[in-house]
Length: 191
Image (cartoon, rainbow, N blue to C red; front, side, top):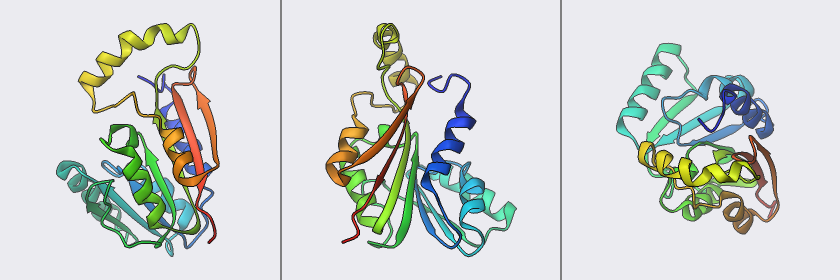
């Protein structure tokens, strides 16, 4: 609903914002069934690595099935918590989280974990939904919020941009659909 028919466009833009190059390693938080793997793999090529993490047993099973069907040797899925991803510190060039961090009970901790998983200079791109930010659309927030909360695990009170700024400092943000969709990009310091 938040995408207003533009989901594919926003997901493409978010992955493009990652600015991946062949051979890089990408951590995807909340990979679901692996819908982003193909686009991520096109960017990092066969010499790069993609590690998807999801807390759901069903999602990780479906993502592994996708990997097997495609025959991808450089794409891996781990079942785990975004707040404590089962990856080593400083091992990824980039991280990607699409419509996942606003569903985590402690997004601050998840963002700290992402920062820890990144190499110096690594970057993270977050594609997510938030409450409408512009009038008159803000008038819909009291109606949409309870519906979205009952149908999904969305936590609309989460300010992902503020959490990213606390951990990374500078964050570039672009919003769409009256501010209800955001693409945020942050970079870990080089030290």
